[in-house]
Image (cartoon, rainbow, N blue to C red; front, side, top):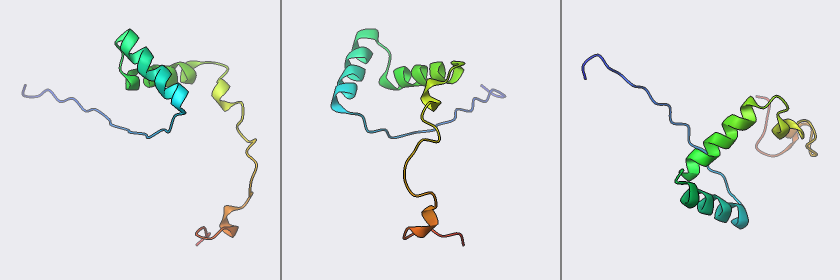
Length: 77
């Protein structure tokens, strides 16, 4: 239709899932008729709107080098 324009963003992510989670996702998608991507999108939207934001509970608790510039391939140039 002239004058009608729809823009769709396409942000694609690759996630490696443990075998049991991948199997659960496959079974749930078949059972519900919702695509695997749709299930993941719904879960992310739910997590984003949650006031508790449980996915942030480990933020700042990562062990490792404080300064990655000391590792080969990283610099402050």
